[in-house]
Amino acid sequence: MCSVKPPNDLSDKGHAVEEWLDLRFFRPIGIRIARALYPTGISPDQVTLWSLLIGLVAGHLFVYQDRWIDVIGFVLFIVSDVFDSADGQLARLRGSSTRFGRALDGISDNLRFVNLYFHLMYRLIHGGVWWPGAALLVACAGLAHTYQSAAVDFIRNAFLYVGSGKAGELDLPEDVEGGAGGTLLERFGARVYRDYVLRQSQLFPRSVKLIMRPLRQEGGAVSEAFRAEYRERQGVLLPLCSWLGQNIRFGLLGAAAVAGHISAFLWAEAVPMSLLLVVLLLMHEWNATTLADLLEHERHAYVRVT
Image 1 (cartoon, rainbow, N blue to C red):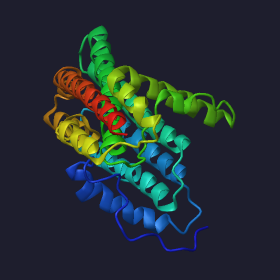
Image 2: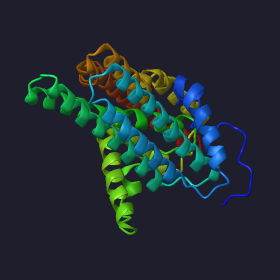
Image 3: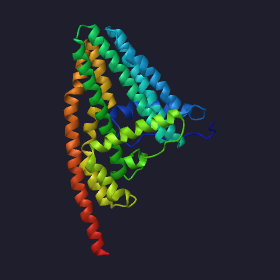
């Protein structure tokens, strides 16, 4: 039980990496829930489970080809996202953020969408779509979603870590090695999270190399000029991340369901959003190469001066 009053500020990750709708809708509502729960014994992980349960119900409602039921499902997804915002804010208010909590949050997001995709596949097949085609479309959309979410998360957290000098929630493969102890759930969460971090490092090998050598080796001791250059180069990619984020995904889902063309949502994830992901990856890695050269030049200049 917490008897201390929570801070009054909005507990966000940083305005530079937050989406417009998050800052003006999800975060303000989420922080009110977090502050209400702050003095209670309810943990952020429990709030994550609330979000998951609501999201599972929301996904199930999209199996019905009824616009009003779909609208209810869309609204429940919004409620689920509010609690998804509140769990992280509650953890930050209490200073109790953990890798297990982040892993559980990621597992919850994945389960919500896996549940949704299976229901959408059933809906397509029941609506007369050839079942192998429906299964392939859903599989492509789900795989695209996995990599899009991982990429956006990495770009934003790397920006906070390198560009702003904040700890953020950036983890690299070496940070999550080992840790085989704990409960069965904790071990499962650790395994899922390691796979997630490894996937991110495979998407951004040059960026990971930049962060590891020499940023991590030197404890993040880089000049403000370098951080400013990082912010200028990589900051232009942050608005593009919003087009691969959860808010746009739910918006597309709601619009496709109301229009009666649910397959349009899946095609949007599988094709245009995937093409945008490729552009983001290429630009971010190109910038990372240039920044690595700049950092190396900066270090050599420092050595010559000293």
